[in-house]
Image (cartoon, rainbow, N blue to C red; front, side, top):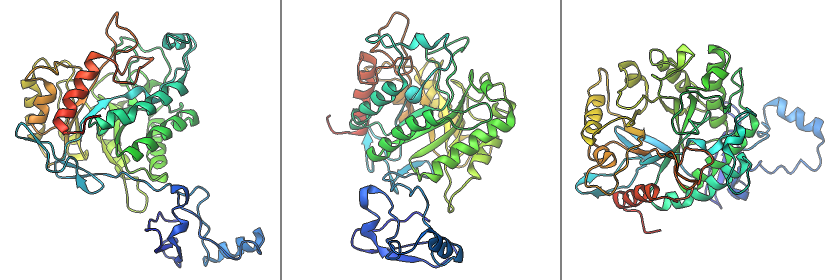
Amino acid sequence: MRDIAAAPGSVARAGHPGQPWLEFPSAAIHRAGRLARPPSPMRPYLGSLAIAIFASSGLFPLPAAEPATLRHTTIGISGENFLINGRPTFPGRTWRGYSIEGLLPNARMVQGIFDDFNPATRARWAYPNTGQWDPERNTTEFIAAMPEWRRHGLLAFTLNLQGGSPEGYSKTQPWDNTALDPVGNLRPDYLRRLERILDRADELGMVVILGLYYFGQDHRLQDEAAVKNGVKHTVEWLLDRGYRNVLIEIDNECNGRYEHPILQAARVHELIGYAKSISRDGRRLLVSTSYTGGKIPSPAVAQAADFLLLHGNGVQTPDRITEMVRQTRAIEGYTPKPVVFNEDDHFDFERPQNNFIAATAAYASWGYFDYRFKGEGFDEGYQSVPVNWGISSERKRGFFTLLQEITGAAQP
């Protein structure tokens, strides 16, 4: 049946396009926050054969076996602004004379559903207090930390179905971390963890930038058809479950070391268009891809993408961040759309000028990327596995303190 929503006490209608609508009290919809099946006074008296006859007649369409959950958070775009539930983010907010309205401050939290199928590397990720790696604990602790991030003003975070380097930066990636199997099917254990995070984000009014592919892991899909299957199955899974708080990043740094040509910079716009072509009841997801630090999108990506993703890794000065934003808006064929940094490992949050401030001043959203430096302990970084997902280090506190100041978030 078509997704529906109505206030308690009113009358809701449901049905399939081109077939008669059913009317029933909307209170039935609101039980346990899920769409309910319309009450049928005949159900106690009709056997399965009679119900099947009604269904085949088209007069009584059967509801879906898994009714879609009512969702709370919808991400949208209007020009260069992000909207949540139809309103610009941080409405009316300014900071040091810079407009914050419509921005989407974010952090790179790509290991929220991480696992490793390689027995030779799995032990590397053992928790210090147990000596064992536990993917379910990782996701549970991620979810437990999310409300505190949100109280500090964080509106979005990046996940990836193939994670990111669990060492921060790596020359080789022997671990096997992918939610997509060799032919592009979604692995149920990863999906269960992803669903838990997406559901909590939806409840908290948060947005997830969901990456599908990561260099160093894309070779685990056998061919281009499998890569396209992965896009198809992921987008359909998200749409079928009614998620409206998800932005798609086809691959992390498309100009990086990808084995499949369709994931590389010259062709990735094809996958952006493919993902945008998949819809449910006229609704589709917003899609983009990202580039290595200091690089700007190609004209093909700038035209195809709904928003533009930049990275600040390797950028030496805040002035270069400002210049990257200017250059991005000058790309051939560019039309007004949000510009977002969703990875930058520069900090200096206590200084009067840093990359976060430079991006904000240029009206671009900025994303914090932190990993565990050599010799640092468990509390440091959000990408090195195992992760302490709390605001547990000086760098983390520096970011969240400045984020809170810029966004005007209430004191936690």
